[in-house]
Image (cartoon, rainbow, N blue to C red; front, side, top):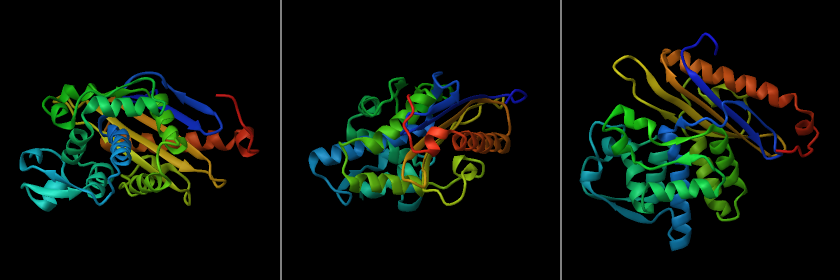
Length: 274
């Protein structure tokens, strides 16, 4: 990274308390990484209201903004309709649909609810105050929602260990994260084959000067004995090409996995101190 024009923040956490990284407690713009705690907030509301994944909610045509990434709008048209919570979650998480994100954010009660959910799961350094529509009004708005790599990795592990969610909902969210298309070079591309894994990416636009505000990935994977590992790799203020950014994330992932494999406490199944 020394000769690259980008700032990297990395945090690797295990259920055993092992932790390693760089710039772990620095704030980074999150972009679509917020769609993971949003999905958790949706599941929490569903459980409170005894709603199911098949529950239909109204979607208004004016919520399906143009000029933003939205497979929901592209596939179903810009019209009034009803969409199941399952489909909206898949659009928002698996396909990073910005309109789907904002529809669900309105459903749960706004960005503050999503931030509160992230904090309950262990993200003590995070701010989520805006939806996707607001962030796309001005490119520099995309700095507004932020979190530290350590906090976001801790939040991810917190979801898997939380008693507040049913196993059905944990399995569902795990599945739609595992289904997220893995762009070349993102975390899933850097992991050894055969691991159960999933991730949520986040990517900003570029300024007229070519600066990419953020290129992120937040992933989990399971060790052969079933224990979870969380890995956050956030790139900020990059002047590098898309291919270089993606290659950096893949290389950082491989280095992180190599470090993990050398930890005797983990290999022996012991418990390390945080």
